[in-house]
Length: 480
Image (cartoon, rainbow, N blue to C red; front, side):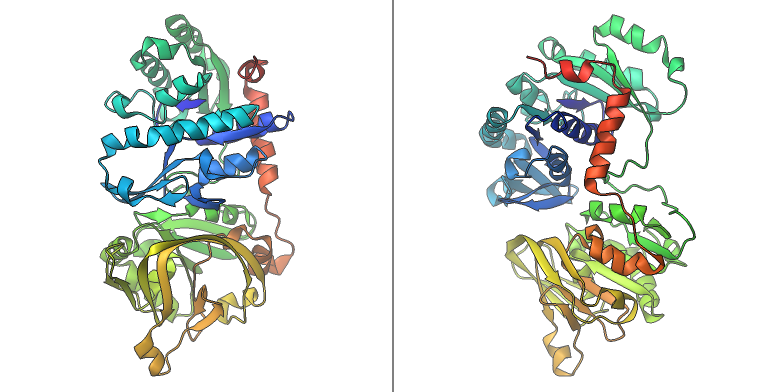
């Protein structure tokens, strides 16, 4: 099990690397995270799970499935999350008190873990946040309770680039119940920059205090290729070679599925940035409105920043605008909510469409192909694409506008529409930039676009941990 001293310490990254490391030994491997709080989700058999567990399953060479992340919390507001249990939205749990929720879901969590343990040679478990959150220990179902249930051999990882790493490790160990300390088999220093020899005598003193050895010092590695699990990765990605396309993604508070933009970081000539103000949209070629877990709330935030006017001006100049899922819904004329799901709001008015929020949630894989597109998106004409859908909204032509002849051009049946000039494209399909054919069509004007495959990324992660862990440690973690 991989525990962390904080969120962002490197748990997901390390879990993914270990999944591929053990899978390369010919072992049957599965990932597991009891509870994940994230708006990055993927479609799997049975519903949806957190994106991190989806990628971990692929790294393990396993079929992703709902037992690998039995409880997914998708934040819609600061104090409210949609609850997804075994892949499906669970309205009763969504309304339940969060402290009481653990007792209700623990039997499901434990059964999923037990089944995976019985079916696999190795289960690599990821914790959440920190196991030393003493205010949450009484209702914990993702850290120590899981570790005890599985009698997991645990690593504790910390982000040394933030500073205070030894205090984080010691403080976490000190706050754990004594019986749980015995499960810790090693400390991992992550994101280290500089000469590792300068760490001495820190690791040795830490072991004297705790009895736990430091088993790895992992150098800072920004370009490992794995999508960020939580939040927006704010470093401006400068791209490689001559910059030909500047892309700004609007980073509203409830952004979802941002992991699907990871491939853009590897496309030669692309500069990728995140925008929270009109100034950050100046000089860009594309503006992307990504998915949102609270479309009307993020739309209100977008207007408050003045981004609505900047996006409209960009489109009027013929600049490319792409809306995906919630972003598509924002581009229309109106959002209508008769069931109390997301809220009512006027749209940005860049596509003559109207979206109605329905109780039934669409969660599915989709394979289709584009019709004829115009403007900056013309290169996608006729391209076959695969992706996934996760949305409550149903979008159609605005009836009053259609009656007057103002009709959006449907370029994917029921899934994508363009405005009359072709500059604005909205689609429900997630994963466009993960599709090799779409990337080649959009960016292959100067030759073949070479983006690392996921298998290459996973193998690179495994190579990295094998190089930097102390010899024998990874094998001892799974020894009988």
